[in-house]
Image (tube, rainbow, N blue to C red; front, top):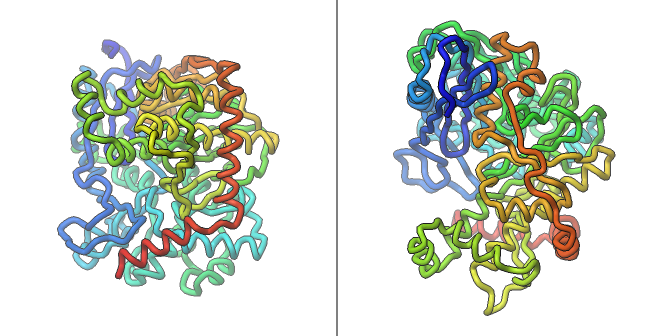
Length: 557
């Protein structure tokens, strides 16, 4: 960490991830990161049973408890400020980002319904995390009706609306818990709810409204469309969703006395409009020009890129004017499972002998498997995998899809499967990059952010599969730094996000370069991946959906 200067001013960025929240103290003049702290969510991801309950949740559910987010403000922010060694009075702004679409039903004053006595034991009253995929049935109906009616907004989302997004999740609440739906005054993105708690003002950020809330050209889907889905859903936008829109980098309000008490920061400092963890990372990587795709790689991967032209890319998550940087079209795509897949395999598919060997060497199991896999020639394991263990976010947009590994024999070893899964996520990224290029939005620089950048084998695999040089963000805390950059703009320290990004962000250009022989070898394997991708994702083969239906019946019988 860089020492603090008493003459400087500082900002705080808070990144609310899937399992924890991280606070980062940043110097405004140059983006130096002075102190950070992480607070784990006490309840984590709720996918089995609600707190204090015994009834098991259905498959594909992923919930959270909103008080865990407040705990981050109370713990991580003061600790980060102490670590930075600065006077809290010199902090001029705070900004936050969230996973998306992470959304919750609230009362008119922002009280989450799960915190009320009436709905404390109702699963639909809790925060629905981004990876809550139990609304796939509602998403299917939204997509089918939109296609039937040729809704004009379809193309802005690659032709599909995800089960992760606001409309599918809200429709699920209406149809499965109508009392919760009737009681909620606002259906609020967590990115906006936490800002509401900080400044006392509910402002809906332009990023999530555009990408997750189907807001295009100032309009949401019509009441007529919503009524065709369910007559009681007709007024969802006007009654539950629509609210004042705040642009990225603008102040949503000022820090309240209560929030100042939680954080130890000065009352009245700027609180920036909320944002999404992936999109807020782009300025931290200095990705403010068209063609620079940032892949924020963690449990999942979100791909964001600015463009100076509007194109409708099949299977993209969305294109929103000003969705990343004001004045440019912001494109988004994504992979629902990346680090989650590697973690699943390590937790469930690696024998005890490998765990013991890793411990003897002082390595994690991930490190041990990576070392073994790195000794292989490309294709030596004889495997090709599909990276759909958490469904497919782009370009198929179908969370009923599931993982697959082809080529296993009695000679297959854990390191073989591990490498095949690493490669599968790279193939999934290439499908996305190819889809953008085919529509006239080429990727000119691929920039990686997130904890997985530490795996150099994985990074080289991506460079070879994509046949692109990989740049790497300088910061290890990209979303938190990106939020801090937005805080600096909201506080008036920079005229716009572009200027703040150039001063406070950073990246290592072409940290990994493709190797021609490896590129050729992976082209052959990618062709096999693409055959599997299209057969199970586009070819009418419904076995993955049928298996999930059987699982649901068995789980509820």
